[in-house]
Image (cartoon, rainbow, N blue to C red; front, side):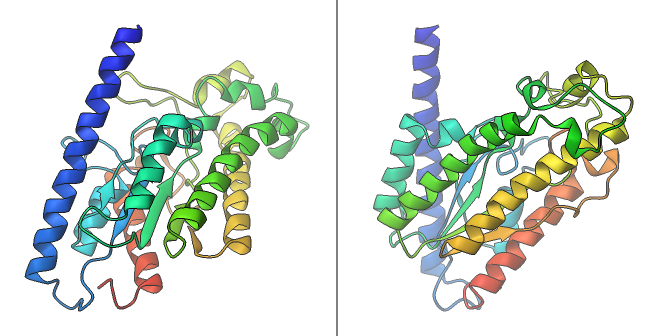
Length: 287
């Protein structure tokens, strides 16, 4: 097992080096040619996160970042990894890489102007979800179906990761703007992908929820609490913007590719929300 983990770690570092080299070459070429309408050159954007940023590209067209690149017409250094959790993103190994990226700045030169970050969803779904969902009681509201002290503990871990992300930015690249997003209201209908998942419905089945609507409304409360946590960072910290995308997707299965990931059209819609946000933040850098 240790040998397998070591090999996977080596492969991960090799893939990351390839991604960085490709980004550097593309950015350098684009800057030399000039970006039409952008006198200051392409925006320097680093992305870190989970599968909302890094979804299968060949079969599905990718997640938010690959679609955002097409809309911006500039490359994004996307180091997101599907399935990643905050506790790993800000754990020892990935933290070291993030520190290095922030210290060194853009591989093509200059400081990062934007860090896009997507994280926290994988920390509270899957099998652990059963720990913060109570046995269904029809007399309770959707919020009452949640074991709130336990969910608070889980969100505290996620919050700690965001706090450290912001602290690293402040110490190493203080002018960099961080853009965050809240996950939209997923539908716990039991759909997975490629032998992964489902991540939501098994818990609600286990806890005796009578139907999908009851499960959806409870999950919605959880996700709103996550969004409120991000909003608190935006209100109290400098250079933090939260994309408020909850309610963007119609609450029906066709809006989602599976329990955790939007449909093709859904990812495209979110990519446009990111583009609009960056356009508002950097009107002279984004067309």
